[in-house]
Image (cartoon, rainbow, N blue to C red):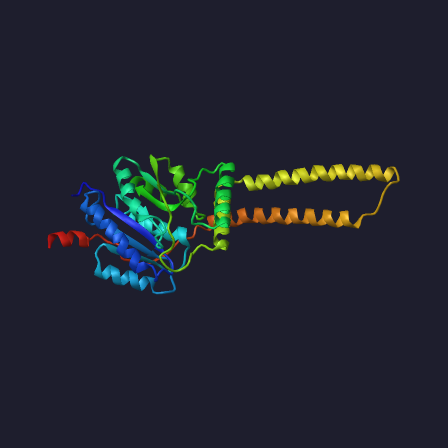
Length: 329
């Protein structure tokens, strides 16, 4: 059965002890079903990446790996962030996989469409995006900000897949091309569409978390959006430049008006207008400095070329899955 593709499902985990046992069980059932349908090889695996968790996440992964041949684990030495943890798993899995699927540990993404992902792979697609059919389960605020984010990114010329997170399938050649991108400021949702390989979309309805709480509160979501914008476009800096030019023109007009008023003897001292002008210009300057500083910070990170993550323990290795063992029994 060597002509069937070996699939690895990569699952980044951060403090997921509450959901992990059920996640392992459900994903194992998906793997077994696909193997029984001759869509993937019987030694396909689940790869869980512990992103420096503080709870029993790694203990659960390590125990499961020792007991179940289809479960593997990678432990990072510290919390490197979701995108870096995902990249670590993809990098490790690329060594012995024909295709890789990434999914979050909370299983809010519908695992039933994984079969459709693999079918699309058989049809010749190198990248298959899992796209939310609707955002009905989101709050009004989260739905509105998400739609606004995609709108802004589109206006900046950054082509994202709307309502797509990190639930996707990638072929081996797409994955190898992705790993050629060495930037420190990683934004996978923007980089992967740049690869240019044949791609397809699969729509699904997002579910509630099995347990625990979201690892992406408002603060992290805003930081993630800012990283995405500043990693792919210099439009914000150009906007600040244009804003500065417009402010200069307005200031020149107001200055000419003030001189004319002075010559005509109609000057009236105005404390309010003076204070408003100072606060407006001061705010614009601080905003400009902060935005430019954001780009300088990214340059600072890039030129240091530090590793994006450090793997402390790697349990991923070639072995027969329990599915194959069960059939032989």
